[in-house]
Length: 459
Image (cartoon, rainbow, N blue to C red; front, side, top):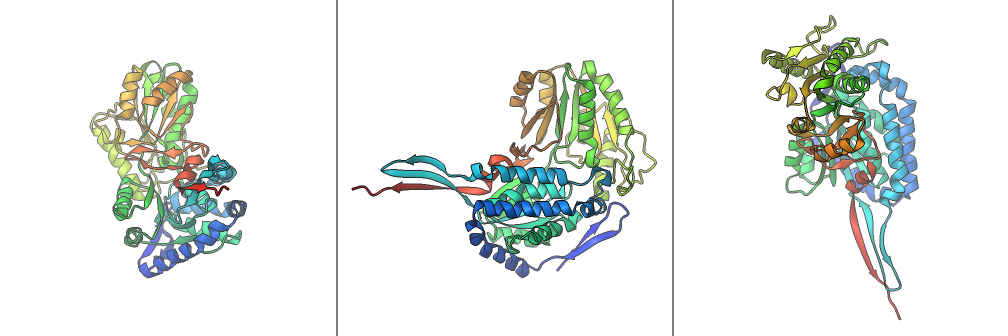
């Protein structure tokens, strides 16, 4: 058995460690989940909903402990209060729409026939959750999967080793049967082996492109359903009629919040030439206003990167861009230690030959380019291997919709960014992945359709 260690970005200490399950112990855990699934699915929908919401509420009661725990594990400042708001919003929305989303689709109920389509749970769902928003990304699948009648096995990222353990404890304390929702500590080899053995009926993975490829390779030939949310390089486009102040504040927050470690964070911005100089001036002021430091300090607004290797990768992209002619506008902060504590950066003079405008950065770094036309902006936005969200800034909704139709992305925002609306499908294209979470479509992906064609006996 291997030992998983969470190395805290705060001070480099070992904050938590857990032994992984042996392959046989992991198979036993999955076996318990499978044995419990039929009885769980047979419970009335309202009971499943009540138990899930009770678990969610129990997490809320733990929030004062969760916030500093998250700071130690992945570096988000305590100032921002953790993830309770989004966690609760998503779970409660999925609970509220469950009745309609899972109800039978009636085709005919006549004297001769009853025909309908029923949603049936897949069975056992594996959720592999990331460290950047460990509670919110997990609940995206955990809540609707359980409500739909699946049992769930949760494997969390090593960087947020304690999150899955705490989630399951909260749900169990709230009355969830123990085998219905389980947390497991697994190494990559055991995870891949379980998937290749058809241990799961559906796998939801949020993480890197490389991790997504490993999931697909493990599932090859098993026909196991996969939901994959992988990398991103989300653009913002500021048009000549945009509210400049609002655009700067929202896009820069989208680029810098959580130290830029957001799935749908803004990583590149295209600004109409008429607003470009004003945008750059405000963007520089915005980045300079951050207080980089220990996330446990109440005045810290920018914490460390979750791991030194993430900070090193961002520094390398910035250095390469500057060497190729870009300008870095933010002087190195005094608190930047060359390790996890990273200066936020605004880059101009960038182009798409530079990795910082093409590869995922996942750090508080943003490149900004001037554009002259919608066509030029559209070409640049689509010049990417990724497609999660795009943020359009204009006072013309028809223009935004027209452009949105042509952008290769999963979600189109107008005059906002970096937000996951649980009523809409969370999805991506290209190397960002496939599938869709939340909304009615999230339920459809966590169940399978079963058709009933019943011919009635007539005299």
